[in-house]
Structure formats: C-alpha cells, structure tokens
Image (tube, rainbow, N blue to C red):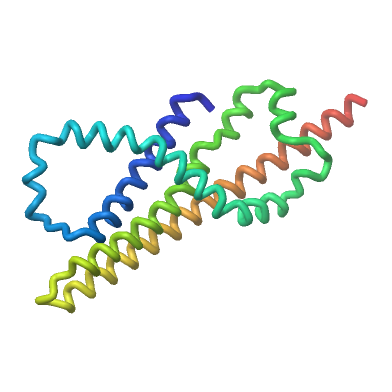
Length: 191
C-alpha cells in the first residue's frame, strides 16, 4: 500500500467522522439554522480546519473500528485455519515477489468498510440526538417520522457497511488460505 492510498483512506474516514462530531456538537448547543449566514466569508478557514482535523480523526476512527471488530475478524480468520503451518501470508508475499498477487492483499477497502460501519452508526446516533433536541414542537408527528426515517436509514447503512466489511475480510482470508496452500504445495514439490 502506498502512502497516498493510506492518506486518502484516513481522510475519507476522518471526513465521515467530522460529520457525526459536528451533528453531536450542534445537538448539544442551542444551534439555530438561521445563524449559518453569520459564518459567510469564513468558508476557507472552515475548510482548512475541517481538512486539518480529518486525517487524524480518520486514524483514530480506524483504530476504534479495528478494536471493535477485532474479535469478529479473528473468528473469521480462524475459520480459514491460516496459522496451521506457521507460514504467514506476509512471508509468502515476500518470498514470491509477485506484484499481481500482492495487489490483492491491499487493505484499503477493508479499512474503509469497517470505519464506515462505525461512522454510520455514530452518524445515526448523533443525527437522532440532533433531531430530538431540535425537533419542531408544533408538529410532533412529522418530527417523529423524520427521526424514525433517519434511524432506519442509518441502521441500513451501518449494517450494509459491516456486511461489506465481513465479505471483504472473508474473501481476504479465503484468498490467503489459497495462497498459503499453493505455496506449501510448491515447497513440498521442491523437496
């Protein structure tokens, strides 16, 4: 994985994190949409602030997602018995030095999917909090429908991201097993 891919990956994750952090923050203060014109002319400063915060927030969110999903990842990994021979995929990739095979083991999609799952969940929670605190008291039914809709859409996005992550991880480990089996077979044929 090159540095640019890693930077972009953390930037995407961080921008998603900023969305739920902003909604959570705005939900806790007395925020009124009519105050937005007061910030006119400060867009460049806001953009600099957002992008300078996005990268480190992306790293933090990725680490959080990795910690939260570690047990699930390990259970998927155990299913494929990757540690059976004591040979790791990293060792095989360093030994065979095949760029096409190495490209398959790019970690970017896995990281973005797992971080998206955490970000969608937190975005859903912060959106519901924001809408609950700032609901229009004149029409409770519309506010309730909006909160329910946001909750359902957020749950669908969260589950979709986690389902994608699970499939990417399963395919990653399945391919790892194939590579290790083929490598072991070749090594045995050489001896």
